[in-house]
Image (cartoon, rainbow, N blue to C red; front, side, top):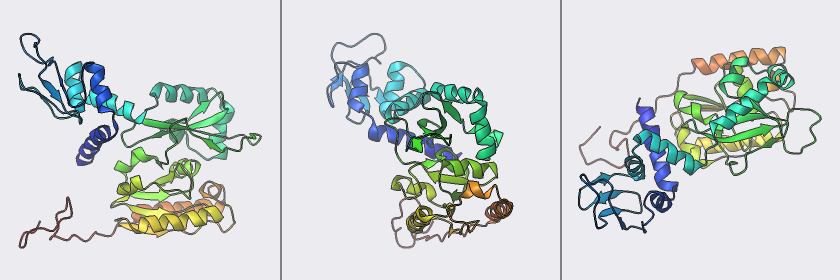
Length: 332
């Protein structure tokens, strides 16, 4: 429950930090000017004659007449529209992140079920389980003839639909295409991080879904092995992390870079893993098709499951919330 509350607070923080507050207010109060007064709709017994509802640049509101208060733009929109706070928060958040409607995700998911060759490719050439194909909402994009992997953020909002080439005859030089305007480098699958305290970083979304078909807690960067987004650093706090990138030059260089980034973060365990197969160019998916590789994957899964994280040292002379030094003699 505490983790969910933290995520809820963070959603409001994202709205407050990135929303066009003035534009939102003017949608409901056309006469509003920056940090100004508007006529208050919350008076009981009729409307007022003179504007008395002050709305700040941050979206907070206070009526100097009826004493109505709104603590943030979400509360103001919810009260003005007469909708639940949770509904208003979700609506504003979707606007801020330019969310992709779930109807588009489900349409492509349905299209995949009508393309048996693409579905069989995922089962037999990518080694995905049926459960993974279903649970991660994999789909098919008809115009581009590509497999679709939806990307969800921490709140389960679809923020990208990555389209992957899958036919050997596909001449496109782009192995993966982002939805226009949604190409931020993200940790995939970000929406599962709140539930897992162990992370196995691998070389890409294909390897993530294959590894998860074999019970491994796989994640990857949508920007590739050589990328990193520091906005996600906080998500690694108190996690146990293993890095297993592809056995090629890009993968080896990417693993070294990832370990440098992670070494600066307060993880509860960190290890760079050697390739499961000595053949150059092999990745996690390739290893699942070899006898020794599959055995090594089983060993890896068992090792991660049995791993006991190291206990972080707690300085009781510091505040656990902000890290500031406590007054002499005070300990928590």
